[in-house]
Amino acid sequence: MTIKGNNPYIKLARENLTKYIENRHILNILPDYITKEMQQTRRGVFVTLHKNGNLRGCIGTISPVTESIVGEIIRNSIEAGVYDPRFPAVTKDELKDIQFSVDVLSKPERTSRENLDPKKYGIIITSNGKSGVLLPDLEGVDTVDEQIDITLKKAQISKCENYEIERFTVTRYEEE
Image 1: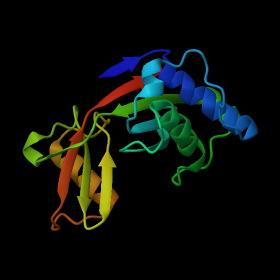
Image 2: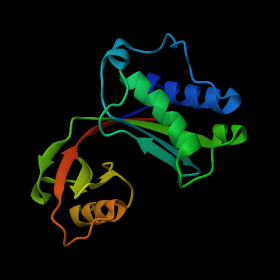
Image 3: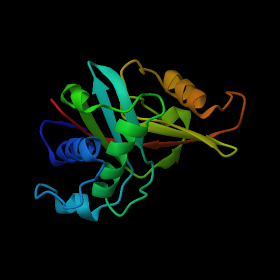
């Protein structure tokens, strides 16, 4: 499910990353727009940044590592904007051109190739201590084979290895 617009998930990610880039501090007082659900629910969360339609950063957690969705967004917005090893840190001047999305993950469940749909489910593939994750409904990922191939490559797992697949859904919050 995708929810577009100005919502508390996006506002928190943007406000926190902005504060961090401007003065190297995270939000320590929660804004009044934060919901009880965000404060009381523990879920994995990915924060994704795009600039001019291109990926600019994406970091997340499959399982929660903080006490709430709020903590996950605060943590992962900074990680995506400053510490994603694929990109240089977002600058203050860039912030106005960055579009945020926040994905809140369901609990992963074991599955098989036959029960996948790359538009509906993200996947986690694991084998011998290696793992890869791919979010659902990504541009250019239209088939189960593409989804599995990309995730195997990300995890550096050979197609010949035995591996396990888990699937999950997301609620995606996007800026318009």
